[in-house]
Length: 474
Ligand SMILES: Cc1ncc(COP(=O)(O)O)c(C=O)c1O
Image (cartoon, rainbow, N blue to C red; front, side, top):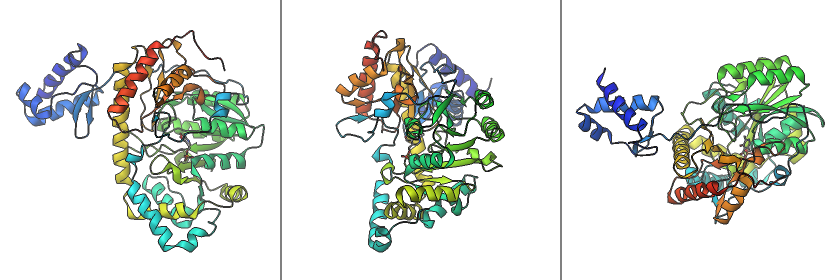
């Protein structure tokens, strides 16, 4: 047995016996080396091996920790709508406020905390644009959006291996407007749209507002979109479009594999289904490796990609985009007919920021922090919440999807949490018919600190008090 394997075996046994517990800090590399009489290189190799096995995690500037092992969510299919139907979920249709309130801990919102965003640099770009181009800033913007920003977005697509021309890009007010414009361009009221379950409430709200029917395909924890089921559904139903989040679905954080993405694009193309690809979390892979876009396998021009700066730079600037070639003119018309154009100030300020700063550098830091936060949230659940709580193990994005023990109702939990100054998102918001009442979505976008640790403890106590028999009927 190699030296590092011997040391790894010793640590593995301590973890298995509970001598070292989830979330506990492991000895520094130097102490490990001294303790086992091995070289520093061997100690490093030991931790790398245990990290590969998923037993330990490295935290920047803090060292190595034992990974938490909260029971994972079952990979079994969630409840789903097998036949097309209207969105029928009062909780979803009433939800209109996501803004953070200073006095409440915003665990409800899938956005990075302000401290994680380059606030100073963005503000400097806004002031520079106001000073240098007041005339442009005060005029109407082109309906398609300013070319400077479209070019920078196209450059980013080229860097991640999904080339697109600036002429194929339309600037929108966030991904939400992108999805709305795409749906309005592709569908007519009464058409059937395929969505994932669970999925982001904004997608369901858009579908409901346009009087479309939904058909649901499961998104499975750790696996992503159930492509076999999707193909089956497309064979059985006449579907016009699919709104999908293959890269880090909200709320699960799951990633659909490349093989499944290719099969999914093929299946939709065979059935004449237009894919509206919501790639808002594509840049937030916790591993640091940017996953591919569906458009990579799109040979027939059937994919409309939607992106946004909301999750990486500034949700309040309301800047997103559409990228596709076949429907560009129709999408520009839809944008013009609805709002004439976007806001010049934010478009030019974002262009200024992107020209002056290294976005990749900011993203590297953000991804690392989110991965670290996600792991700490996971550990806090393992430590403070009832032992039969289950949580998703996100591969990216900003959310953790938690199943409460004993079928507790997350609306009861969310209400009780609010009285303790904590906001959470009850699971019913992520379904078309009010399912997932026993789930809650928590944000991984807050900076880990004492207050967050206390809040997770408080939530654990509240979860333990939930009585499965007390459920709210919608
Ligand atoms: C999957 C998904 N799509 C779209 C949006 C909305 O993004 P934007 O702020 O860019 O409109 C969100 C926000 O949470 C989201 O999670």
